[in-house]
Image 1 (cartoon, rainbow, N blue to C red):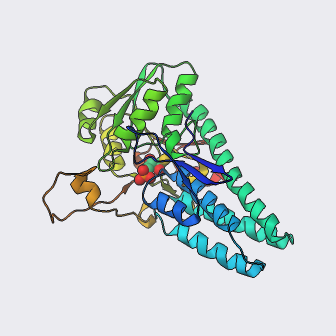
Image 2 (cartoon, rainbow, N blue to C red; image 1 turned 90 degrees about the vertical axis):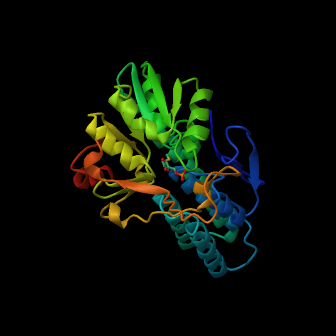
Length: 347
Ligand code: MRU
């Protein structure tokens, strides 16, 4: 059972995902700055896990607040929250979790709580965000599992597993785990997911740990596999889903969706409501993170491209809603027209 982030009295405990699959090392992050750096540098990654980590980072920052006035505490909270918000721009779970922590502070303040009590409320809220995420993933697994037929092979991209969430299930991998729990025989094809190799390093590791049959392919093999009839469904996670269903996810997801449509293969997105951004009208409004060019020119420390080569490294792309067969959430499964069905999930 994988839980990638944990709250402890010493600080925030994180499994260093940069080192997987060859090393399983846990870090103790003892300040909010260390948590922010860990999110930025991908010690932890995946939309729900980023949100949970930011909530713990804020709780930790405020636990270490040494002032004596609530006003100073509020200023400090704004500062720490801003520091978290600067880490990664695409996953909306980050901003969703920050808002929840700010609201918790305001509520505690309005109730006349002391500084010590507010600190405790923030720790409890962060733990609640974490627990609710695990529960949401379990429901996603249940609903999503129903969509997967017995004896199917599911292609997935990046890592939308326990490592990318509060733990245990995952979103896309949750659907696969859910199908397995329902007694179905499921195998997985995992895209390696260049440039950061979340598929090769993390999804392959996670599924092998759970003894779910998994075959690793390079990203450019997906079309071949689909055309050969080796893929029965594609299931991916999401970093942000706009109000019309357009979905930002790891770079390469859009290409898979187009290939899936061309080959009449269902293309499912699995994500909790914390990934749906109803304030974002469509995919064009989703900010796309551009990451360091070294991720493209190097694999680990090995240089694979000429020095000084121009590089583009958008970390995510947007799949237009018309390519998405269904969006699986903890409140049920949404289908077209997403503008209506996604909104309904929040009622
Ligand atoms: O850059 P990453 O590794 O944070 O990107 C992760 C993804 O794109 C995942 O598919 C997404 O966050 C969903 S995780 C349940």
